[in-house]
Image 1 (cartoon, protein in one colour):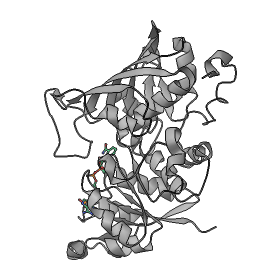
Image 2 (cartoon, helix red, strand yellow):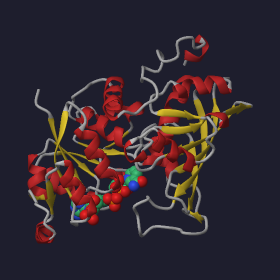
Image 3 (tube, protein in one colour):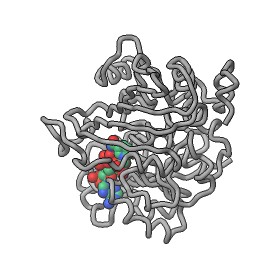
Length: 357
Ligand SMILES: NC(=O)c1ccc[n+]([C@@H]2O[C@H](COP(=O)([O-])OP(=O)(O)OC[C@H]3O[C@@H](n4cnc5c(N)ncnc54)[C@H](OP(=O)(O)O)[C@@H]3O)[C@@H](O)[C@H]2O)c1
């Protein structure tokens, strides 16, 4: 069967990872990447063998830099079955007309407002909503990380409410403009932050509020999570459920900080030392009086990448089952510490009472 033709518009932190992730799947291929500056990332794209497209006014800059351009971004879009828009947040929405004009399906990222597309996406929680859809938004790294833990816990125990504090990284490692370089910045100072409502674009019935603080670090975000659960359960039950999810890594072995997780990624020889799984600190999981407490770290540069691959599969109807798609994506990318199974099957001796709704 012919591979699905995927175009990547925007080749920065997210775009270059999505391109590599798509390139290693057997049912899709990268037909081109687009950016506006002939910088080091363009040089790497050439080395990876990707065709480069740019804006008409930028072609000369690339030629002067000795980088061959395959055409304009519109030329790239015309050839694609689907475009993954990875342009900077709030800029991607301006490309909607172009995608519509050429009848091409499109995925936007979490930096765009929820109204950019009728569907917001998470692989575990609502794959079916994107099945055959034309326009979808893969939610942000934080929302993805929250959905991955809330969804299975809600299915098995019922989530009464979630309260989460996000300690956000100030910028990505390659970012030379963001901050802070000192101080903890309330982001925003008004409460609650937008992160809770963003989870509701995926799992609408969850009662969730959030607060966010920006910190001078580039490694990862940290979530301090408090969840009130409907059904009685122990910390071990929660560990069992979260440990059964292929995109959740229960972190232990002396790791108590985000810098050690990144070092762990390096030691595992992960590409770009990425950690696309949620890193839930195993020892932090505690349950008291029907309330769950836990810490998790989210690698902002990589957790949404496998979700983009699954989203392509759903939108192009390449695979009807999210479990099959998740495992296929995981296997090709070398991620996941266990195999994703349907939630009920993943916990063989789970007490039957938990399964009653
Ligand atoms: N970074 C994260 O932690 C993270 C996590 C989850 C989701 N997201 C979301 O993912 C999206 C992309 O973020 P990012 O961090 O990857 O941004 P980024 O690193 O700034 O990359 C953006 C890319 O878009 C290119 N670009 C800029 N203007 C363009 C245009 N008009 N047409 C085509 N390409 C253009 C840039 O390259 P040139 O400068 O060469 O054009 C760059 O390659 C945003 O919605 C963001 O909120 C980011």
